[in-house]
Length: 128
Image (tube, rainbow, N blue to C red; front, side, top):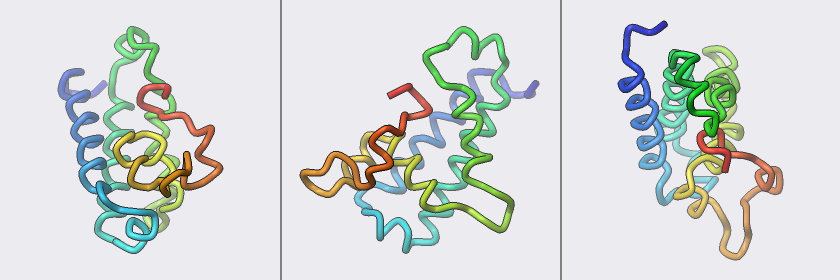
């Protein structure tokens, strides 16, 4: 169990999500992949999000079944495959699936998704 309260852990998760959204606003796929600072910052905040979620007590998770806790906790493990390798394509897919504001920026006009594999991707934060 974390020494941080549930409220602080949830605040950490919200702050990480808001930072991700601020980092990617106005970027397209190539801009995201080309900007090392942005991609590093987004990957780091996904890591924080997953790590904070892992410390939320099980009884609280059980009281909020609408959130896909295992998927949120798994973000860190899916994104960071060791200190030497971050899968930026996966980071991008998670961001597009999770953040509605970024989804608009990454979509070519008239297309529902920048990548056909994203069409069935569920957002881990809300079951969207």
